[in-house]
Image (cartoon, rainbow, N blue to C red; front, top):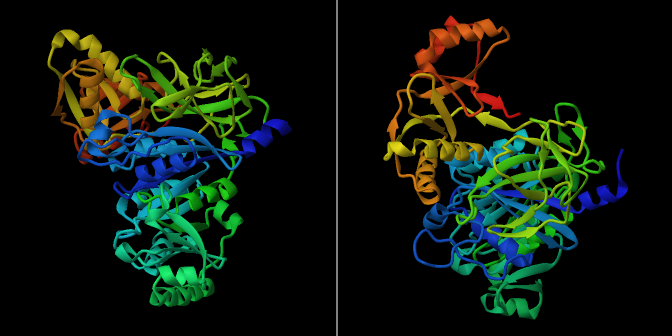
Length: 527
C-alpha cells in the first residue's frame, strides 16, 4: 500500500554521492554545492599545507592535515523545492570499502574528473561499483581554469572506458589562461567566466552580441561554432530515461575552485536526478511511498565530537514518514532503537530532525547498539541486502605501549570495527589483537584516532598472514573439524564468527582442498 503524501515527499528527495580519484577536486565541489545551496556561508579551500580554513566536510584531524577525505560526510540542504542529501565519499583507494557502502545509500552520483588527467584508476574502480548498483552518473569535468586535455578526447575516453553514451550539457570555450566560459548546449547562450563578477563568476551572454565579441576573441568564437556543430551532429542530446537507466552520462565542464559551472550542475540535479528508488530486501522490494518507516545503517561514526564519547549511526531511510521519538526495531536483535535525538548533518554541524522521508540520511546517536548493515523498521522485520564485508588485504598485530590498558584497547578496537573501517580479529591462540585493512592509510588513521580519541599509543608489527577468509559449513561437524585441526590459524571476528588466517596463497589453497565441505569466503553479507 502506498501513502500518497509520503510518496510525494519522497519524490522531492535527491540523494547522491560524489566520486573521484584523489585530488580531482571532489571536496571543493562538495563545498561549492553546499555554498550555492545556502548550506554554508564561507567556502574553505582544502590544502594539504598551510593554515588556511579547512574544508567543512573534512572534519577529522588527519583529513585536515593531509587535505584528503577518509570518512563519509552526509550533508542535507534544499534547492529549487527539492531536498538534497549529499554524501561526500572517501577518494583515497584505501577507503574504497567505506565508499562502496555509501553507494548503497544513494540514488545517483557525480563523477568528478580532472580535465588534465581524464579517467584515473580510482575513478574507474568507483564507477564499476556504481555500475554494479545501477547508479546513474553525472560527469563534472573540473579544473578548466588550468591547462586541460582536448574536450573531445575526454568524451571519447568516458565513452570507451566506461561504455557510456556522453551528452555534453556545457561546452568549454578555451582552457587555462584562455578559459572564457562554456556554451550552454541547446541554446544560443554562453556562460561567460567573469572573475570580477563576485562570488559566482558567471554571466549569461547571448552568442553573437556586441558585448560577447568585446569579451571573447573572434577566433575562439569561430572555433566554438565549429565544435558545437560537431557536438550536435555526433553526440546525443540529454535523455532523462537513458540517464536514469545508467546508459548515458550528462557532462558538465567547469571549475569547482572558481565556482564556475557548479550552479548549472546543481540546477540539473534538482531537476533531473532520480528520486528514491525501491530498495531490495531479503523478504521483498520496499517502495519509498509505503507508510511504514524502514531504513538501514550504512555507516557508523564514533567520536565525531571528541568532547563526547558519541557514536552516530548514519541511516538511509527507505520508506515511510520518520518522526522524532517514534519506535523503531532493529531486525538483527529485535530490540527497540532510540530516536529521541535524530540529527541531520552538515559535516560537523547538526540539526535535530523532526520528520524525514525516504532518501533522507538521518543520524541516530546510540551507545553501540547499531552497527553497519543493520535494518530498522516500524514493525515488519525487513532485512535490506547488499551491504557486504570484504576480506582485508593487510593484516597487522597491534602492540600496546602500556599492557595495563588492554581492556581500553579492546573497547577502542571494537568501536573502530563497528564503524566498518577496520576488521578486528582475536586469534584462538595468543593474546594479541590482529587488525585487517584494505590499504595502509587505514593503519595511519587507526593509529592517529586511537591516540587522539582514546589516549592509546600503539604500534603495528607484521602478522604472519596475508589474508583472511570467513569459514562456514552446512554440517557443524565439518566446521568443528577445521577449527580443531587448524586452531593456530583460526581467529574470531567481532561477531564471534570463525575466520581462517592464511599465511600465503598455497596455505589457503591447501586448506580448501583438505576441507572441501567448508566454505572459505572473501565477502560476507552483513546482517
